[in-house]
Length: 389
Image 1: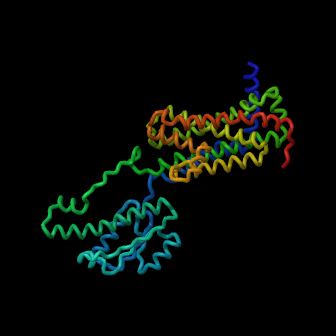
Image 2: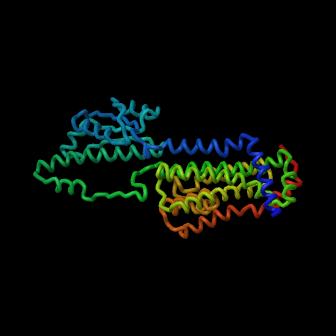
Image 3: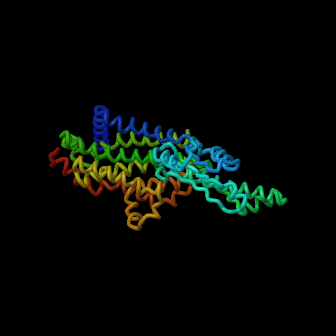
């Protein structure tokens, strides 16, 4: 009972600190909410639409103009300019006015009709990954359709039926099924990783900052005295209000994307709640561990920020970890962001049982108990160290 009273009093003290310092309110509530709405609204259409592209039509025939109209009819591409030469189109792409352009040389239609295999070129900007891949797909499709149109006309003139023409032009039909995301909605893939990743960075930093400021503002001995110098009780009381706030924000975001925006979540509510709880506790555990490892406000926050940012690259959300070098594959397991992503895509997105992600659940639990290895050093710092700016 005495321990519970101590935790309660320390939690009230922490709530007072959170209210008096506006930085906590901004970093724990305002900024995460802004980030969540920013990313989800940025990709609210699912996939980019009407990406500006250009055309250099040197042939200027009915067939070439038909190719241009078909390209403009695609959902993701929009022909915004016609250029007289390649140099003008290249300059427009370098200036960011277009992301790609199609070059149709003179004699293209005549070459197709006489089976001379004319060359049609397309250029696209792959610096912007999504826009580059989308325009590449459309341009490749439209050039294939041009050849198919000529072949269809020839076969039709020879008296072939429509079924025979389709079998000849496309002997293999691809039946594409994107598992759990048939709409090809990029928002489902990115907003469930980037926004929580930003939230995890803030949890890292706020945790280390809140402990470090006890030393900075000379409140450390008062804090420990409220727990009879028991660092475990003191840390639980200090972290409890922050945990509740972070969990509330995390769960609110998960409710928003899964139940308001309708993102796929075959794993159900239980997996979602467990993911949020383990993610918050793992990030707080690493933040406490980092401060105990190097009991300095500046150094602990530097470690947390570095670890969180590297976690984005090693999570596997944008580039598969298995395709990286063996050393990076091993290091990736040291980042909470990696295990968050694996838990999400295994149990929440695909709906597989929790046993399939037991290693990632165990890793998140391990991050949560990391402070046990360094709390003794934190206690020593609070009682003996003097803050040096």
